[in-house]
Length: 82
Image (cartoon, rainbow, N blue to C red; front, top):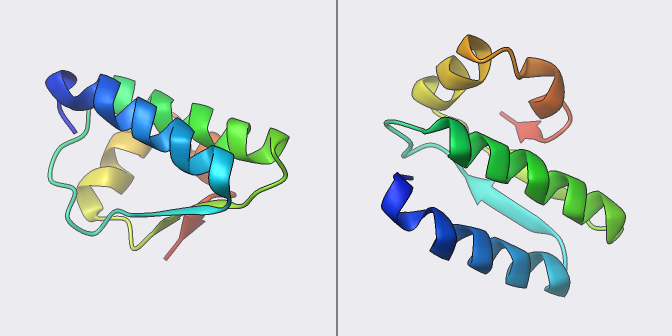
């Protein structure tokens, strides 16, 4: 996810979270911006408030690395499904 696509991804995520549970596949992630990680954290919180499940399935090494590098392991611990 790059900066040019953040708005579209955020809008699509919000639409999906209004409809039900969301599972994001992370196996193809090669790079991730801090803003993208913040969108995922926000999406998980929105899902929780709507009483839906939000998961990240098969996160890539690059995704794990970005999460760890930014000290966000706690925020992502409940949503990652390896």
